[in-house]
Length: 260
Ligand code: SF4
Image (cartoon, rainbow, N blue to C red; front, top):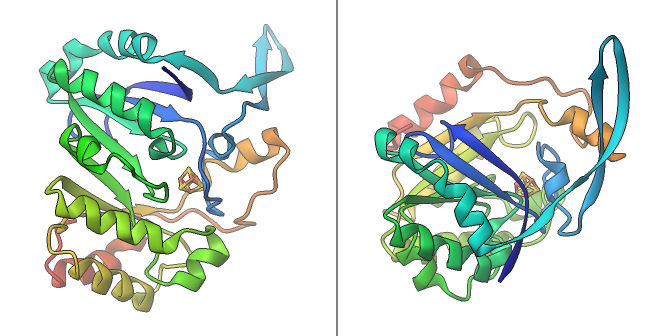
């Protein structure tokens, strides 16, 4: 069975516990205006220019982003880092793009990771149909689940279609008893106000299994990629947020009983 990915990041420390290998799946049906991996959105390969330095001279080259590989090939890559997982309590994180859009391939890799006793994590926006929910959950230790807004019309304006599915999948996964951390990207003029966060808190309070939240400050890190892909950056001149900007929002969540 073949899957399509666009990157493998080793020694990641923000994608779950311990030292991790993060596998970035190609393809996502959403178009978040702040997406910092725009090269992930199309399932098909895309071309992105990269700068190469040779002595003092800088060359621009066009690189293809995205490639197919088999379950066995991916497991070989993951196995190279096994010693770091053991020593740090880490494991493998499947991110993207939207890893659940390649559900069969993902499930096969998850099963093989679990057979080798690796900690597994899925970083998802939950917008794909999940046909093998029980199997996926049985082989996943942690979900990092994006909750970007509780407002359906805002979701459709800034992100795309599929709001109901993301909430439905979140509840279905929670009912399977898997550890979930809700990840909230904090985006200026989208959800960085008290009212928007209180809506998200109300939504999450309906799902008692979720009591851990990550607030992720908006950053412009993906800006350059849009130019290199010939795409328009959806956030204009909006400046990156800093950790202190999130303090008042963190207080709201803590007061509502969430761990940040
Ligand atoms: S869900 Fe993630 S990968 Fe998909 S468009 Fe949004 S930020 Fe990008």
